Length: 109
Image (cartoon, rainbow, N blue to C red; front, side, top):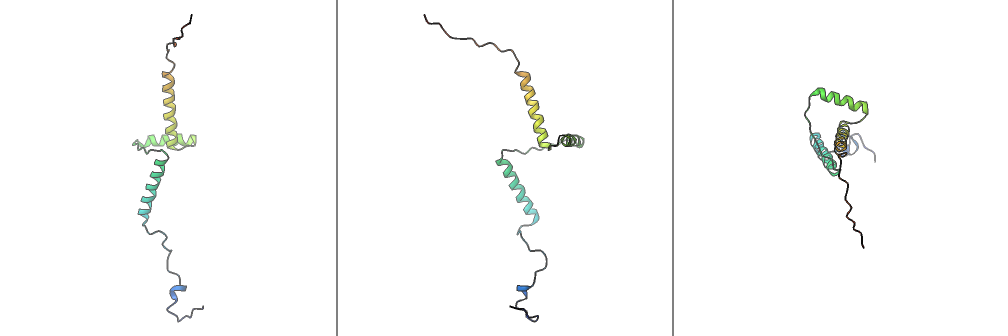
């Protein structure tokens, strides 16, 4: 089927609409909101919990430097430090002298 230049009825079939076609009916703001909600639900399903800290900028700079040196993310570094500290405190408590268990066996005569 050929289109005649004077044909006004089929112009919308062959012509292109101006601009990029709309692929998402939601606004960008709403898309970001939905994506963030999905991310939070995914993290929750993985057993992760969000934590917010308020610290001074120089502390963040130092933390970023430490993370860059170790090649890890902030959350990973903080997790490692908490685990190290907990292991150290358990190691300090465990070497306490404990009483030897008393045997309660009796001899049969």
